[in-house]
Image 1 (spheres, rainbow, N blue to C red):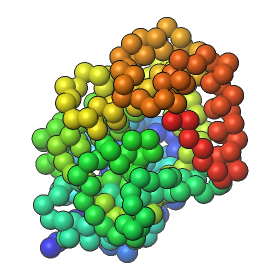
Image 2 (image 1 turned 60 degrees about the vertical axis):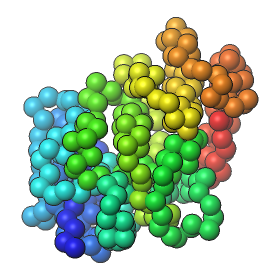
Image 3 (image 1 turned 90 degrees about the vertical axis):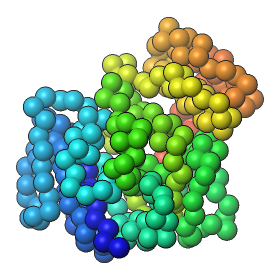
Length: 310
């Protein structure tokens, strides 16, 4: 089975990181791929750094105006020469075995269309392994996850940089929503895993860098558009819990930015019966109570410990 990948890398002002990102792809043990870098009008030397890496498989596409992350991914998908689309953000990197691991998943589960592995987080130099709801007996093994939403309620077991999607998925459920400029991955996951299962390797093959300067986790979302998850007609209980959990997360993020009227608008869409007791309590807590919890959580994470405010 000849498996070829199109690796889509959206690029916007990542000159400090993109070289490591590209080298992690070029250095894969599995070498059947092309790389599509979509430069979304970077204002730094990101594109120049890309051009210093001598590999004929690297192709660059330049947007004439800044369109955002969703549009950059869509541009890469539509330009892809191969059926399996692998996504990698320009400040993350893969272990050398990532594509080989995914190719083995594809061979083992030929009827599946979405594939991923676990990941580690690099939080300001501290390596954190996100907690997983998967049974410990599946560690280092592959499996098909039929209820994505149940397993991912709380901490995601994948990121946008360790997922590979067959092109037919986008034909079925649509592309990334270009109107969404924050949490566009969550919007995609809701649509994708409503229809598809996930073939998954439960071990780390990818590093996600978080809390970088300019990253979405470190910047205000005041001018960002959140996905309107409440618009989806859902009957499945696990999926409803997932959607309302993320509406809760959005609400808390907006609260932390002191955008109280926007917070109230989002809060009206949340059905409390899909939240646990702690979430209901935190949802109604004033900022002067919630903010110290966030500060302590970030402090613990800087020491390499992950605490949940879920």
